[in-house]
View 1 (cartoon, rainbow, N blue to C red):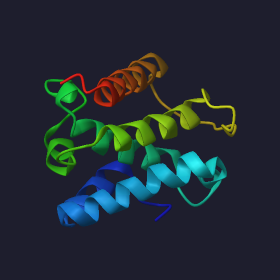
View 2 (view 1 turned 45 degrees about the vertical axis):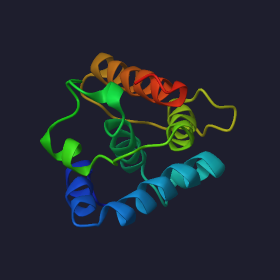
View 3 (view 1 turned 180 degrees about the vertical axis):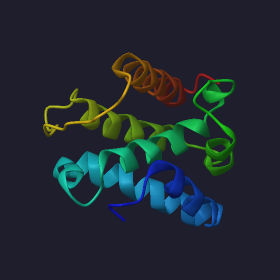
Length: 134
């Protein structure tokens, strides 16, 4: 699974039933939150961010956001609970270094400002999902 990129991961998630997709992405965010060192081997950061995006895309606040393309919209989880949005937010905080348990990561991106804006937007959508701001 380490060699699977975000587009391939989305395609793989689309092959799963909604229940299996829910289980897959919720397991990823829970593992990242509980054991941040998984980002150094078992779960690459890009896969964790993809799982977080699949959760966020299922929230009403994601509607119309530029990062929700066709594949992400199709893979989005229906009926995301505030608890799952909270777990995804905790995992995102681990990835971006906002959590005291964060591990040092080197994420190579071509546009740091765009990546930062995307991560901030994901955070905003997840925060709204926790508050039930739909």
